[in-house]
Length: 246
Image (cartoon, rainbow, N blue to C red; front, side, top):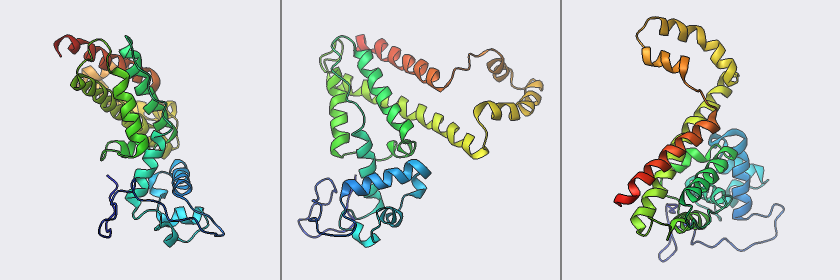
């Protein structure tokens, strides 16, 4: 929750409720939207490590102190960035009888946004996002299942949506970690596999890892998109198996 560290008596403590300062003539006009967009551009280019109030101010050709009229901490800036990305995600439509389709659309909407903004995954598993776009996304996600067969109870809806979200975040963390590791080594996935195979072959030849050897030899080894889809199918099958008992 984006809370201000210090606030006057009666002053809203959440950035979502605090008005922006009045606009005034300046060589570099500011707004929360411009600040957030500049921060997102920095994070997209160089990761969250590149985001600071000083660097955002420099990107906007403004003094860092001017930003404090619009937000109080870097944590608030991160919350605003996450909420802005939630605004990019198409809301899932009401399922009708196709609850699988609604949950699949939810999963792919979040995944697509995170692949455009890799830093998002670092923040999704933290505190809840309570900005207006995040709340609208949560509302649409729950409402998409409301009234679908087997989803008459809000607990059933919340469990299904929550389970899919947890799966998506976990799958994204693994995929993005692999992407970052590849960039660190300067090799693509195929080059990295070629470089590491001699070591792996020696380890498997010891016979101590027979199931890993079977995996290396016989598994399908789908790409990231195929692996995500197969895992999502497993999650949806699990939800379907529980529906008669809920």
